[in-house]
Image (cartoon, rainbow, N blue to C red; front, side):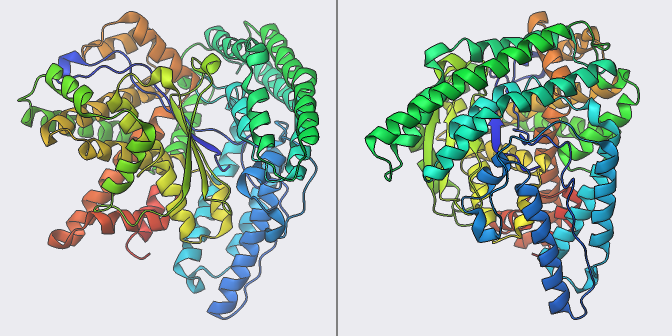
Length: 601
């Protein structure tokens, strides 16, 4: 499913410069899952394919097919539709019934729908399709095969994840739900009425998990309940009141009286539907306490190793086995350490102090500087509007340090980046965070790709390895856009890369190799991370978010591998801008597809 938000998170990071002095805390990042929570896409889609004849006819027929898929998917629930399209009617979509969607999905129906769609897809003559349609064809084929496999593991999914759970996502989605006119406000208020139904299906899903012995461990439950309680405890300061009033205030067609009435209606919806739904969820989850049978990694669940392999493949978009990914990670860490050793003329304190002195801390100025600074190495930056907003103080503890709200594909001029000020420890953190979320990260990649006029169906997929890997790659590049010396930038960037690599190794160690808490402590201790409380936090965070670190780190390293191949092929004619343009033009996809087509787009 298409992600609506890209998150960047953080545990507090300390600067390091040698192998024995790694920090105990590191940035975590997360990506918002779709609120439709159909654990795979395309359920209930009725489409048919037919070979058409000439290349022109075949391409036209294929695009008709993909448009049918797109229309069906984005209309699956109100949130999907409104966040994907500003004007659905321009795409031939009539407003469906108002709903968040449901967690009640039948595995047999999923398999049948995926099989039917794949049969339709295979009826088209791949050899007659143009390059972009071939890419779309391969992506659909890849995804439908993944859907069939995922159907066997529906109850292994955790919509209440510690890093990207519905309990923290839904308020953000509601607070940023765009109002373009009066009808959008009416739809929003109707949507809030369905919150309890949506949470009822979530509760039923969690009870099914509990009955199957797949419910979360009690320590994870405590975190989820704390997050729910934080939202409930905001009272009149709840940002669903203030953000609604702000958005309504911008609708010029409304009179002051109408705006006031809408604001009162929204307050009623929050108090009558949203808060009671959270209270009911808290009560139901508390009743499931103790039903979780596993407090360790996924490998300790029945077929847990197979599920983790599937999760990693889908999360990263990499075709490599877990063993190959572990080897790739270790090699990159060694390379980074060697690069650091070559520039160790500075001490950690020198670099830290230099960063504090030379870096600005105004988000708008930083984004402007980044936008200008990437001009030589990246394709032209698309012109767009951008708002920087701040996470409400009451939710700072439970929301990520930063996140980018993906705009509707027919309204890419409106972009929003949220910053959680409590996590911006220094100016360098703010700078690299804004590179991750803005230029040349998520905002840049999203708007650039939409400017290529892709098939709309490409926007319903979430290839986390590509999008988060690109943003992490952008973040790493940004160190060299700071006023720091090349040596200082290298030390800081390689340090950041190594830390994320350690988290990736721990993720695979815990969920696939079966590391215990003590194994995890021992692993981090070998890198000088000896704070038991910190390692305990890392362990529980990884337990609650299998594969989360991998889409960032493995995605990033896969881009580095693609660049190595590009350099080897181009030799003296290598161009950073040419490479970046090639991978950006392919767009979000599994890395095998990116690798195949980056030479042809």
